[in-house]
Length: 437
Image: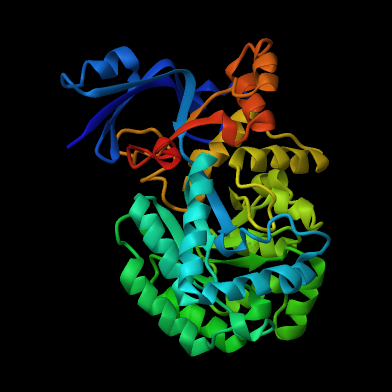
């Protein structure tokens, strides 16, 4: 049994912060302590109090004056798309056909999948993300590569083999039956192994036939504890094509409803152009709308109406995500910076406490795993990020005039990137330092 005592300024959230003065929404210690034992937080609070609980000889690490928060959570990313990030000039459907699908054919090669899985999780850790909900490619080998690498690092990640049997090149197609069989085998091998979680992953309605969506629904019924992830209402051309393919559906969301894919562990990427009926359907089933601001801006898809979705009579559960490689950065700090701008373009604002709630507890709640991650509570998994608001010359200069925690958080969100991430603990282990060695 190994124990470590971390010291620094600690910040963790109890609920959504209504304003920057809503102090009861978070726990902040100017001189805080976190006692880690193996992979869990066993004590948290003022450093002087936590230190009283440690045995002699415990390893002590002083991160002052930096901030210690729960590790960031990314609710939607495509690990096979690392080599298509920053590809020029296409909207969603052209982008998939021109860049994404050809790239994903490479993942037939298991060695390629292992290399990219390692590099992808390196980037997650480098940017302070300790949990990601990842899409693999259609190939079973890609999911095996991802889970093997994630398990080796003892990360809590959610992932699944993409299901897609039409409207794509031969090299990235499966069949309804093979998708079902491969998913069943991966669930048996990986779900619940260590900290791994499997997600049933039909890419989206355009690339799945009705027969395949039937299989996805069957998997959801057979494994009600699993996540389901797909895409919904990202782009006007996508919506129109979907309704051509499913003429019996009243709207895009109705396609997924028909096959039993809505629910509290169902993650729908994008959800930009929802009708009120669709938003009601998501709300009533507890389904999650995943906000991917850098991707939505880069592909010109539209502006996610974050605050309206939260405030409507039937509010939506919302997560945020990078959506790499349509998204333009692996950093959840950069994601929330762009998210702030999207929300501002809709005539609203997101205060910095709300942003950091969303990156941590908010995303953990949306992914239905807040009992494990997303807080610094006693008993929580010891996934922690250490942030330095003076990481660059520009940040140091700005910090000379930042007088409040809210200003510091907003500075981190606006100017921060992987350089602001001083250390990352994954299940109690210093992962960024280990990665750099």
